[in-house]
Length: 433
Image (tube, rainbow, N blue to C red; front, side):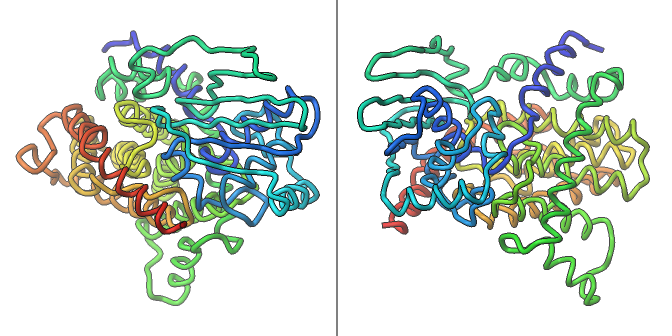
């Protein structure tokens, strides 16, 4: 068993499995606005936001926590008014109703403008704040919290070191170890690492389950989780494992995408990916009465495999990230059902055969439908694998080796689906004009 990756794996989990309040794309704009305002030393008179096309796609229609509104302008205004720059992805955690009222007034006064920047970065947010006499510009790129430059009154006061080609392509420090490792290394780590070294993963269960309960108790988004729950009560759906997985996973995404003031535990910079990698495993473990160690190891396997798959793809793309995170979940579920590494590999391959190519057409309340579809596929693929049924390497883009299957999926995401992304953006922009 190769243990050389164990310490880096733990570091990657700490970096990539973190709390995030609200959709991480508008949150990156809010964070840049908060940092710029802190440097300015006073509340600005106006804010100018420039973002990459992909960030615009994921910021146009998603709910901003505590506001009842969607979009990047309100996120930028709130970041400047009440954002805590030290809180990173929880920058909006301390926002009050008075702050929201002030931010809405700024928007009414047209003090915030947002435009698309002609940049090569997939993830890019530049925010300029000004009081009319002084200005500060903060630019975040490649990951949601990575500040690449700060310009104050026209003078560059901070410039990050240029990233390597890998970091520029994939946008994270995680790519090094995750591109060297194999799925077998991840499985061995999750199954054998000392339990005390992965106890922090329990926080993912706690945060995302609380978000799920919030989604069931409130009227959030499309109410997918709540709708399914009502149909259980009506007798139209059975109260079984599949239904529970769908209800509780969808409900967490319902709440998150409609601006609930509760953080999600994210994965690879996405709250929905964190939900998709967490809730199906949590619900399955509870249904099976798994003990704490089984649950922790299953969650660790799910989270780390989700990171491994996403590390081979662009940070934001036309491929729905909930589906790749769900491939982590199917691994965790298969383990809880008693599956070995071969069965886990088959389950991941079956999911690739099932949901490969599901598009991302921006962050919005309807994302909860794709999250629930991914959860359903994860459980279906796991149950098939336990019975030794799976999509074979002779079918479609699935290969005989799970790492090859993942590489094929990533080639699709990073290749032809780049043009798909352009087409999606064209359609979305034409709708908003």
